[in-house]
Length: 140
Image 1: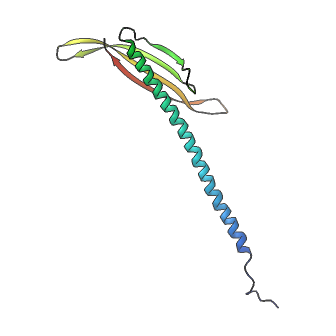
Image 2: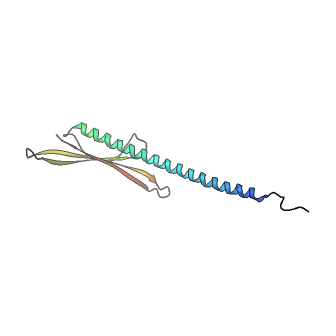
Image 3: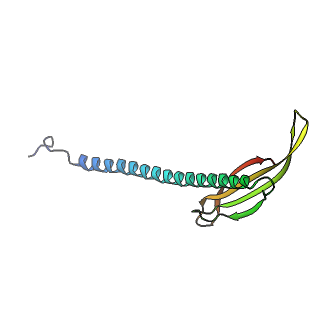
């Protein structure tokens, strides 16, 4: 007759392995989710930076033309960059009042707007877009 007290417990090892596997699966799943979100945020950040550079580049080009030659540019796709960016330049005439001498000075407000997608819905093709915009004032 064998005693049940002397037998080693056998089912605990299987329970420990199953529980350990479940814990590892949860940890690995959360790490993969975090990596995916980090990659997405990195892509969006890169697109934001590219759009800002396009805006500043266009503002510098327009200011370099001088007051008389600054013109508007209709929305058009930007070539030479990775991604789909649309750039538009508007020029608005303005008059600035100089308080001390009481004179008026002609000026132009140059606004550059760059629109770009940050995510796309694969099933419908709809894209979430973001806009980067800056304005500068030039004088004769």
